[in-house]
Image (cartoon, rainbow, N blue to C red; front, side, top):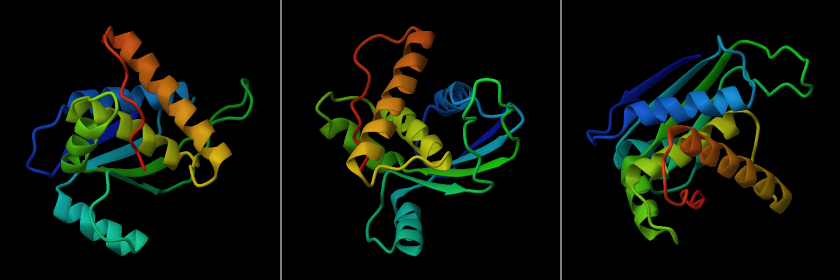
Length: 165
C-alpha cells in the first residue's frame, strides 16, 4: 500500500498512527496492496476554503475525501481487488481537537484523527451516511475497523465514539 501523509497544518499530529490506521483499514476492506492513498493535514483556514469550494458550506469541517479511481472492496472472497489511486483524505486537527474534547467519550485530537482517517477511507470506498441505513452500516464498519486496529496495537481504553458529522 502506498500511503503518503503530508502535514501542512502547523500542528503536531501522530502521522505514524494516521498511516497505520489507514493501512489497516485498507487491508481490512481488501483493497489491492499496490493501491495509492494520500492524506493531507491542513489548518482550519485551508479546510474552510475546501469546504466552501467543494461543498458550498461555510466553516471548516473535520474530514473531506476526494476519490480518484472509485475503487470498491471486492464483493466476493475470491474476487481479485482492482489496483488504482484511491484519492485524497484531508484532515483538520483543529476541528478534530474540538470534536474529541466535546465527544461523550472524551478523547485526544490524535484519536479523533485516527477515527476521521477511517471515516475518510470509507468515503473513498463509496460509503456514505446520508440515509439512516447507510449511516448505520458506515459507522458500524468504522467502529469495527478502529476497534480492530486499537486491539492489534494493544491500545487500551474505550475507542472514540463517532463524532463525524
